[in-house]
Length: 307
Image 1 (cartoon, rainbow, N blue to C red):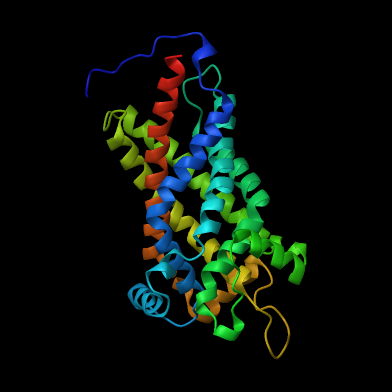
Image 2 (tube, rainbow, N blue to C red):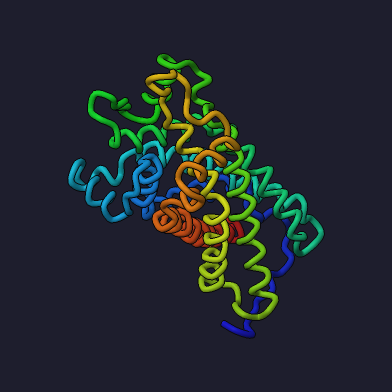
């Protein structure tokens, strides 16, 4: 409550949780938050891959009709793997770098938080690109005609088959928009959350607690979704593309070409296509992830403090 701000007594650093716990907390928080939003992610991918103007509700009804309720959880193994690899690295690295930078001071300036997010996001996205490619393909599969489907059994099957059928470099297809998006996401999401939290606290709008975490993560989720959706659309289109039947050329050659071509052919708002499900997914996951992360952090902190 108000006025009861407990100052933690300065204890010997022996009781501080070891560094690996940051990565474990990040992974668990990522998966916990994801379980609620996976259907929105499937919806978003289906809407982005579809070039006609079909709304979220029609897409939802269509998935349900064609594939049943399980269709909404297609690619879940890849998504969970993505949280356990990508989110673990991204959040874990952010925490580690931020703590290193803030040694001896209470808070670091916003531009340093942005830089930290950038480094953490870009590193994680580069390493985890194969997971992304598999995930997009597994989720978009239901959109294809039966003869055209890839029917990967699970994420490892997807990776093995992509390597065997299309060469290992295909696993890093779209690595530029993936890294770009990863950098933008981590920069906006992690730095905005951190910043919103310190600002809401310093203006005495909210005190430490779930309310503060909720407000900060909602602000963070909105900023992150708005800035990253255009890159996300380019990434999805590039990773799911097949060569043109007549020319044998791929429709999208680079991020910048896609960022130029999509609005030119489909209008500027096509870059924010599916913002509803994207915000439900991205905003929802941001809120879930940060709230779970803060709870897990408290549990781990108390566990090590009591040792």
